Amino acid sequence: MADMPEFESEMHRTAVAQLDQVADRLHLDHDTHLRLRYPRRALVVSIPVRMDDGRTEVFMGYRVHHNTALGPTKGGLRYDAEVSMGEVTALAMLMTWKCSLMGLPYGGAKGGVRCTPRSMSKRELESLTRRYTAEIMLFIGPDLDIPAPDLGTDEQIMAWMMDTYPMTQSKSVPGVVTGKPILVGGSAGRRAGSAARRAACPSASSNRSRAATRRRSCCSSAPTSTSRRRTWAPMSRSWPG
Image 1 (cartoon, helix red, strand yellow):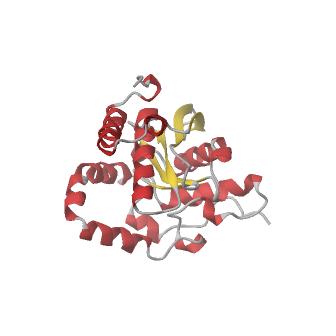
Image 2 (image 1 turned 120 degrees about the vertical axis):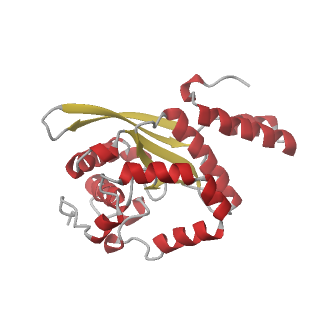
């Protein structure tokens, strides 16, 4: 199989190696195996943001759709200093397996922005999120790709995305994201469901302890804490009529 320098990362190498091992055990058709090693589409965007001190900083953002055979893609959006194309491509691939094994009518996707959310103000994060959403606008939608919270992001980030998306739709589209606040159409049982899954799978939770610790660190100063959930305020831009 050919190398894939565009997606070079340890995580992507691991994901592809796992696929190769399973394909060999299942005697998977060569053409199908080859197709699954690559994402269907990948987007790279630059995101200029005016920081609080007046300077402009440009962040790199990504959105990857791995496979759409079962339906629109679904996957998280992460804000972290180590986000890369290789990382989100690997995670999109894993999301494809997750949806397929659970019998869900979705394909795998993943997105991210390389930034340090804990060092950014709420205004900077809002500007970053709205510009990122505008740049990937043609890549997302209820019937195309549905982002969700992930490392360094939460319901406020999803609310900003949901508020930005209708700018080109002339109507509200709550289904463009999941994980949004209940006030604007989020699911009441989402947090309880996540807690229940962690309780039911202690071994899996322990394996993810390092990632969880990293997430708490990223969210300690950014507006992603439990206290912020209690004080969530309406979005700054008014809804379209």
